[in-house]
Image 1: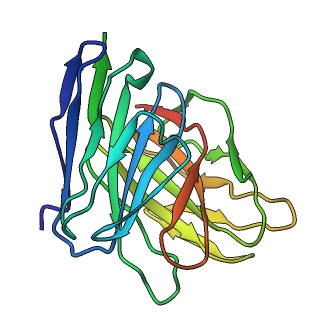
Image 2: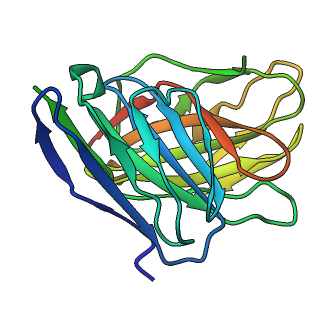
Image 3: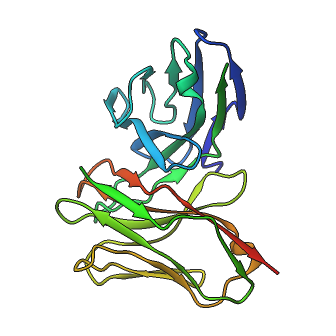
Length: 115
Length: 114
């Protein structure tokens, strides 16, 4: 298993450009998540999905959109990039467990700079 | 809302020293508590977890005990190694079932010198 994969690893955008961060998992996990990590800070949840076709906002959704057309893929879209979106983006996935306390598995991250 | 507070870093220790990284939380209900570790250039990995009061999570020589009375989940290791150098995140999960929305502390960077 490759686990959770993310592309690209690095990207520089100009203000106002758009891009899609790709995330895929091959563990057949129900749940997928997008976080951002700002320097010196913990991760903050942007969006999450409980299954194909179902998404919901996290703590910091403004400026982002997501879709979940398959179990495996959960892309994150930035429509009009702003310097405040400079961050490291992590995708994660998890599987429901009988106890409900399921571990999240993280991808290696995408480092995005908006200039 | 729920929150997690970790001790300020960075922390620098010598090999074989004793490690404590403090973590306290504020939460409604009964969250699960986690420690995640992030090695340079990698994503986060689960280090250990505890799901109810007085539970002790342990892994790779690290331990943390869920203390409801002090709302704490301090990470400890008796003898650290250079390979333990990483950033450590304390986190809690909101919600007993379904999607686990994690709330993270700010992270503590640990450097172990030989």
